[in-house]
Length: 339
Ligand SMILES: [Zn+2]
Ligand SMILES: [Zn+2]
Image 1 (cartoon, protein in one colour):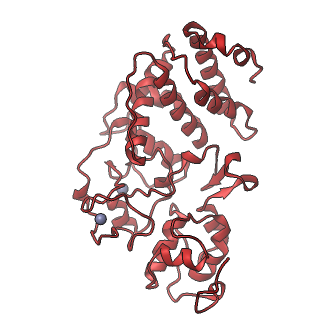
Image 2: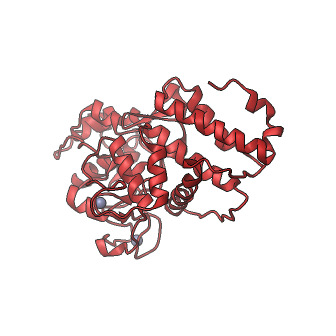
Image 3: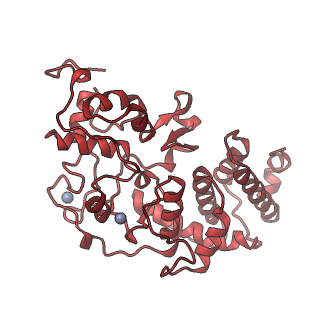
């Protein structure tokens, strides 16, 4: 901690405007909201006072200071900030009460917002920090990750919750893109797993919500899985699709467009997975996918549903793999006692 440059010892600060962190609010969004509410320049001030760099991400270790300054309870703040397991992110971490196995399941440096939620709720939702949340199920729209005016990526260091660093205020009309059925479905699944029930029903079959074959298949595959299981399986499906000989996929760049592509690829491929079609897999680099599934199997925290899904998915992939050729090269893997 480096407090030397501050005019007062930050741990002893106590700002006039105090508020508890709200249910469903993300920790970094809370710090931004409270700093701005007290006339400070948002997260840049908070990071400076904590002795962190401009690009740093707040974590559970910062909770006691934020609680002292702004009036939230330490416990609720810790819940809404990232906490590393055994001090190392590679070994998993917890976020909003969920244990997550991969760093890229969260998008921490590239914020996304729903301007309508910001206007209605007045806070940044914690579900927006999940990498596969690309839409708002409440308002049925694609999230905003880029300023419609200056076209730069949104930053956590922006001067207001709904304000870009260029001064532009986000509005509903700024996002003409409508989400796909799969994107809305996944947003709803993540909201449910994160206990944020503010969104209306928008799963397959919900009133007024269009669905399609891919979303139905995805829904069948993800039923009863934990949030970590949902993230692993969607990424596993997208990875498996890139091994599919039929696919000619050019990967998108940018956090949100990449995530939208992942959801689309996973949903399309889930139709094959749900019906156990004999998909021929590419013979190169199956390790990312297999690692994701084996990790589920090896995790003592995985739920019985996650375990059983990972088991059947691995069995299916192995069967297809031996047909396509990489199974022979990975014979040790297919013979391994996985469960
Ligand atoms: Zn919204
Ligand atoms: Zn801008």
